Length: 392
Image 1: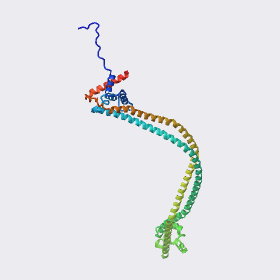
Image 2: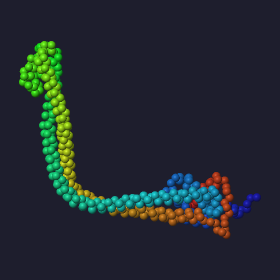
Image 3: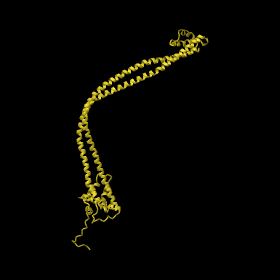
Image 4: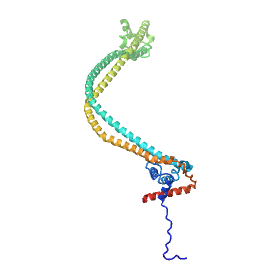
């Protein structure tokens, strides 16, 4: 049947405002808008690391049917969401505490640096006087080191002279021993008649170099030339006696020289050691003198350097005051940030976390629903609230 003219069509029922619906739900559960906003603010906090946008939305969506459900009425999935939220809060506060620690370290470093600069000023003033005292001390040390070095040099020269003189006699004895041993070979050739007349004269001529040093009697010396150039078969009894005595004298001479050389070895070794020791002493004294001279030069330059150090330390000290103030303010700001988060955001979370249902009006436990449906509904509620807040 067609409607009569003038009759108004009934208006469809108005859709319930999402934000109003959420606020009504929160009010029913004893949760204020301020409490809700404090928790949402924490979930969206920059220090809530590891939370992407989707995760943040999921956590916000779980609030009405998770955190804001009375503690005694929560089911296991709801308790899990509360635990996740608490980990987010604890993580944020831990990072804030780390930032405070870092700010404290920065302030401590600035304060220590400032104290160090003050100490440097005092040290530079004291060092200026110390440099003058050190320079005077080094001058005295240099004079003493120079005298020690000159004495060591003189001793070294003395030991070298003693070595030269002593070794000359020792070397002569060694040469004579070697010569006597070599001439013994010439004697053997003549004694055994191994050379003919012309060659025998050559060997004998060499032998004459040592004959005067063998201590033979004059009669023996006169008989030797004739006896030694003869073949053994041509020698008579007297000739044989002369050859035997010459051999004995030559052998005795070689033994004497060997004993003399052996006896002189310890003295030669001692003289060489004395020269080495004197050389080392002189070298060490020379190095010590050079080191003292370098120390004196450094001490003379230290006074001017300390004056520059004092000026630089005062300039650095003046620069520290602003840095210390900045570090102090930064630390105070971080501490205020943490305290504010604890007093507002975390306190609101704790209030909701520990809230019990009123004794006379206990809410019925939430009926478990399909997880996918629950997640979809919570996301929709979050989106509605966000849209309502944006419209407001």
